[in-house]
Length: 183
Image (cartoon, rainbow, N blue to C red; front, side, top):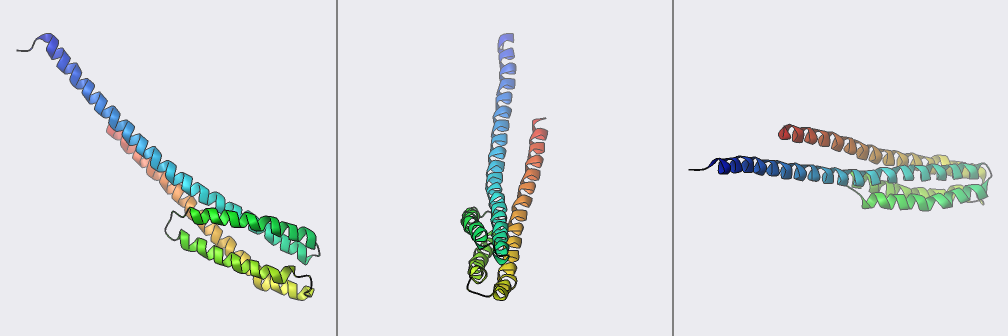
């Protein structure tokens, strides 16, 4: 037969084992939740920033084209040159962080459209062409491509922001479930 000391030891020892199991389970659950959310947010955040940078660079390039059409070739050319590299760098970041279904196709479409946009720039920035031809090159070629690229970057931006929001909602539900289990 067990003495009082052994009964107390078994009782408190059993509770200690249960506490350790619950603690380990909680730490594991919260750690995995935190890691998964961190990965999702980090990758989507990179895409969001890349899309915002693409849009900014594209806007500045468009401003450069308008400067050129208004006779400020040097200032417009400088804006275009400075932002062309920025756009390409942001596009490469986006192409390297594809995480969502359909995101890759949209990024490739942006890349292809930007290649066409760069070709259309030549017709606008060529000082040997008459002003009417340059305006036609802008309104008939560069501007529609600008709008397509900007819309595509906006769609990818929206997709990633929605995914971040959905991940946040999933994390909240998982945290609530973990709290419930703990209680």
